[in-house]
Every structure is written in structure tokens, then in C-alpha cells.
Image (cartoon, rainbow, N blue to C red; front, side, top):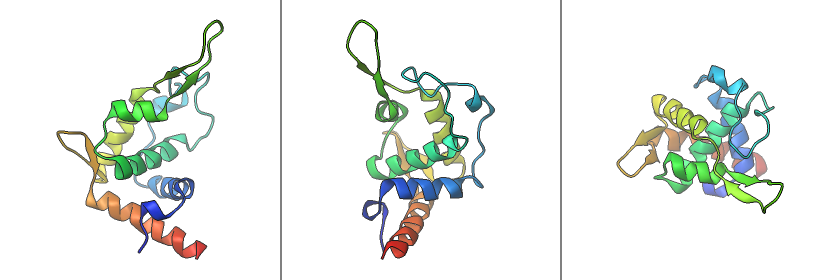
Length: 138
């Protein structure tokens, strides 16, 4: 049986985001806000919330226990400046924390003292999708 480490991350996130559409609800404010200070516009992809949530679920699986601060650094980018050099900027924390809360409500993530970790239900969700992807490619 294959797991998250055996398949391509982008394929896994894409497949998981399609399945998360039925399980979590997209917040209303997401159409109007940027995802971080380093961005110029709000996300143009209508599926952004589900893709980011699936990616966060994978990050918690691989790197857990993690918190919002570590994920803000992970999803941040370089910000261009006119006069001085580019610097890394953390992304916004609201989208990440709302995604973590939504994933907690459906039982895929659980909160501990050190941060959020993957729950058995979330691990089985990602491993099942990984098995399907590995079966297609074999």
C-alpha cells in the first residue's frame, strides 16, 4: 500500500481538493482578500480554498505537528520592492487558520499542545487517494 511519500505531491493535492469540496465549505470573504502581503490580487482560481486546504492537510501529514506560523512561512513568497532587495514575506494567517479549523471539524486534523497533527481519519483519507494515484501510474 502506498502513502503520501510515494506519489507526486501536486497530483495528490489536486485529487484531495476535488474530494474536499463535499466535506468543507468555502468562506465568503475569500473572493475579496489577498492570500498574503506579498500578493498583488486575490486568488483568481475559484478552487483556491480547496487546493490550499488539501495542501495544508498534506503539510500536516508530512511535517506535523505544525502551527499557523510555520505554515505562514511555508506558503509565503518574496515581495518585490522598488528601492531595496526582495525579502521573504509570510502569507496571511487567516486563510490558513480557517482551513485548519475546517479540517478539524471534519476530523482530519487534531490539535495538540505542540501544534496540529494528522488524525487517523485524515491519514487514511490521504493514503487512500495515494493508493489510487499509485495504481493508475503502475
